Amino acid sequence: MPQRPAVISSARLIAACTLLSRITGLVRDMLLMHIFALSWVADAWNFAFQFPNLFRRLFGEGALAAAFVPTFTQTMERDGRESAWALLARTLALLTVALSALIVVLALLLLAFWQLGSADTPEHAQARALLFALTGLMLPFVLTICVVALFSGALNCVGSFAPGALAPLILNLFMIFGIVWLGPRIAAGHGPQREVFGVAIAVLAAGVVQVLVMLPVLRSRGVRLGWKLDVRDQTVVLLLRRLGPVLLGQGVLVLAPLIDSLLCVTLEPTQAILGDQFPYPLQEGALTALANAARLYQFPLGVVAISLAVAALPTLSRLAGRGEWDSWRDEWLRTARLSVFVGLLAGAMMIVVAQPIVRMLFEYHNFTRDNTARVAALVRWYGFGMGAFCLHHIVLRGFYSVGDVRTPLRISCVLLPANIALSLSLVWFDSIREAAFAISSATTSTVAVIVGATLLQRRASVRLLSAPPLTALLRMLLAAASAAGAVVLLRAALLTRLVAALGDAPLSRATDVFGSLAVGVATYLLICTLLKLDEPKLIFHRAAAGKR
Image 1: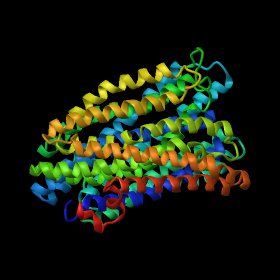
Image 2: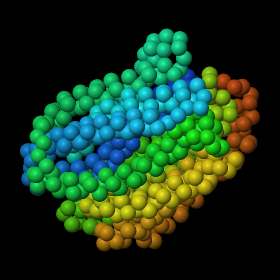
Image 3: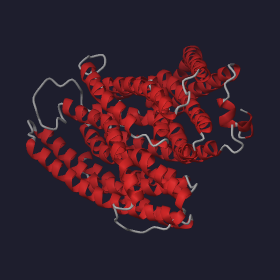
Image 4: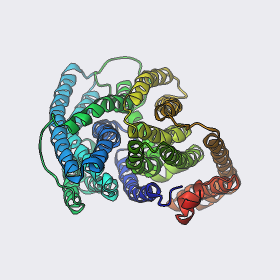
């Protein structure tokens, strides 16, 4: 363990900021579900919001992290800060021009799809119109969210992690304002299909505010902004060479949730984009159920795994650039183990406490008990993949830190068709339906992690899959299984009766969830400590971090 665990400290700060953002995001989603529940209006909104989310993952968590951050860091170390600022200015100009052109192309494609389709019922026509209108309205947010990701990447490289981690907080607060105040005033009693436009307008305003808030933060950290479109500069050429394969690789990776969304709206009778007639396997609200379950598993994923990955990438890139491979291996293994440690705990709790969590958060007003059962089933299946979901981000950053952007592309190109085929094979079974998308995601992510880690150790010429980390993984799995078992026993022996005595009130729901989670977390930490795993000390005791 290094004397100054900078990655762990930075990850703690990012995790704290991300936690605040995720909590407000949960409030946002709760309000959305109270109003729209699992309806075709909610499906249309989730489909439209998928586009900016796709580009956030593509640029913010993907291409910019993989291509810009290592290039920016190396330029700053090799040529000084002025050269790094110049690279930032050229990247900003290139990103703005490219995305503006892309938005125009996407708008034309939406128009073409709209003209191709047909509606067989008035409700179907209304659903299609809302879906395309919202999707078109969301396109400008693609530009602002990617500019924010670029600014966040530059700030991360100069040691400022909080602004980028807090940017989603602005979006969530604006969306809450759109749900609670703006939407009802725009609707004026005309129903949820008009009310949802208040949320969309709030999102666009949030994007502009996010960019404006970043500007003084950049100046205060000494970052000089400018605008210079120059694709012939050698550093920009290097960036573009890295960016191309990353965009393809990440594009294939983030296409999976987008394709899931397309399949959902196509396989729902009220939302079929082209209006074709065939026996639909999914019910209305399938996309919204999938989106809400995904947000619940992304809560621990964002707070822990992505925070660790964002904090680790600059350090891993510096160590790789200096050729300090033993230190690189130790840093990667430390980060990977921490990510899996929390991921397995989160997954175990999602499996055994899924229904109480969904019930506590969403089952109010228009959100029914049947809606709860549908979302909870998806949450459980995502829980089985949580360890892989978390580790996947660390594996990707490992490749990016050594300048290898092609191997993740090859892995993604192979697994995306497998993911689609598995989803389409399972979705027709009555006992599975929309859970097919969660099952396929968990399965292909697990395969991607195993293959990726195997190839990463060859690329870096270090041993990653040795006996110590694999033994630690087995001990974590044993602890996670023990924690899940303890929660099941507690609920059977005590919590179910206590909740029944309290009645169907917010207090009883909270008691059920937090009582279960408290026992699960305590059991997990106790078993991990007894099994002599160092991760509990590493997370909770800063002073103990230097002893490993």
